[in-house]
Length: 218
Image (cartoon, rainbow, N blue to C red; front, side):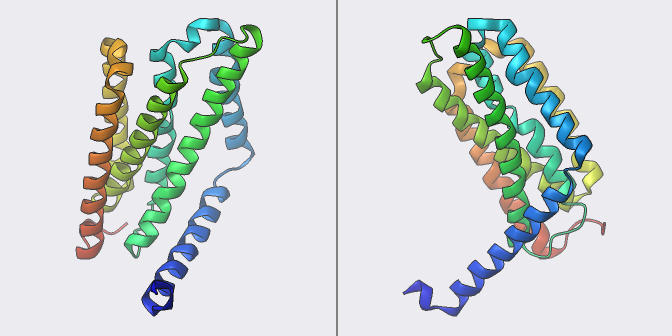
């Protein structure tokens, strides 16, 4: 029934158009230097560090922190993708989608590389898979929240303000991890809910900013 409605067809077609365009824009930012930097990051944190830690890498604190690495990539990617103001919420959502996809892809490769590296030398002992799934959900929710916040800051204020806000958030998260890291595996469920709530609020604020044209022109 819905597929027969013109508005539904236009919605899907417009969203697909934005997803293709924003995906191409993201790929265009990956030059040789960027690719090499990413490969170096994956080699260090996905191979060398897990090999050095051995079975300690399967400590729930380490693995939970690793699954949250996507926030470090998705936030800056979102801020960069909003250099120009989106024309609609659909375009903004497409940019957030690719930022989250990028951040979570890097995090997944690093986590998978680390687990594979350790399992090669310590088979068949593996991590707590149930806890890893909970941690992955926290990582995904955190990545969506960070990308959404970065997008809202960029629209409401400026991309530069978004980058400054991200630096402050990253420093705060680093300090929180340094002093309270042992609590991390115990609060994955609550953290996931909080991050989901932040993402929803940020998206509502972003929709309002786009609709009323708030913020200075870029």
